Structures are given as C-alpha cells and as structure tokens.
Amino acid sequence: MQKLILEHESLLKGSFTPGKLNFLLVFQVNCPGCFIYAIPMVNRLYREFSDQISFLGLSTAFEDFDLNTEENTKRLLFNNEIIGETKKVFEHQGLTEFPYPVEFPVAMDRKAGPQFDYEAGAEFICNSNPNYKVWSQFDQQSLTEKVVSYLKNQQELALTFTLNQLKGTPSMIIFNDQLEIFESWFGHVSYEIVQQELKQMTKLFD
Image (cartoon, rainbow, N blue to C red):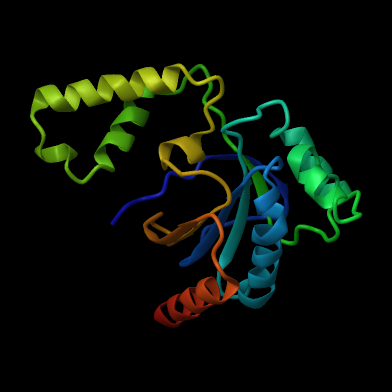
C-alpha cells in the first residue's frame, strides 16, 4: 500500500493529531476551484465526520509563489481575504471576500530547506513506481539522477505536494495512522462520492 509523506509547518489554525483515519485537503490560496467547491465541501465533511476522523488542510505552493504564501493563507483564515485568480472569480459574483470561514485545521506545506536530502526524496518518488524495483541498476540510477536534478531545479519545493507527486490542487487523501493511503482524488469530485467513502471507512475502523 502506498504511503503518504506528510510534511508541514506549525499549524496556522486548529490542532491536528493523526488518528486511525485521517482526511487531508491540499490546496493553494490562488486556486479558484479550491474555494468554489473543495473548501466548502470539506467544511461540510468536517462538520459531519470530525468526531470520527482527523481533518487537516494543507496550504501549498507549486506555482505562483508570490501569491501562495503563508501570509496570504493567514489572511484567508483570520480575515476571509482572498487573492489573485480566486479573488477575481468571487468578484464576478459580487463578493469581495470568502463568504464563510475555513472550519477545519490548516497548516502550511513544509518547504525544502538547506538540509533536505534530495537523494532520499528522489528514492521515495522512484519507489512509488511499481516497476522501478524490477528495472536494471543502470535504469534505476538513471531515473534517480533525473529526479534529483528535477528537485534541485525547482524554484521552491513544497515537500508534501512534490514527494507525493500530487497532480495539482485541490487534492484530497484518506489515510491511516501509519500514513497508508486508502483513497485519493484530484480536482472536482462530488460530495456524495467522498461522503460515501468516509462512511464506509468509519465502519471499518469502529
């Protein structure tokens, strides 16, 4: 079973302790889709399941690094401020701010610092390929070197987003206390689909 690497800074809002069952929303503040449906949906799920499931929102940045920042995340959480493309979309609806609070705990994705082990990061990414272990040593080494080079050449490296090779935002992941991933989604997914999955999972962990 694939494992999640969960790296985050101190929480900006609320508290999070991994439980037997956990729900993670990875979002960017300059991501209209995250605000149009993902955050409202996770608010609703949080109200329904927070007594059984630990929730965490993770504000990340894989692009627009001047906008997807901790400061702008705090402005969202404490003042309902929105920025960039997100703000433009809501202004078309006659709204100057996010119309409701983010109810679940939120942290910032951790950035790779000077001590980050690029080789270890590349190894995790490579091993997530199911065919990697049967490749020749030469092919394995070649891929590892390419991934290390890719990681080192990133303007900024958000660890949870990058090491788990998420496709974009919003991304949602259900995982256990061993960080084993049970289910994940990228992009738009209906409330009913996620709700049903969580209902089934909570029955298994009763």
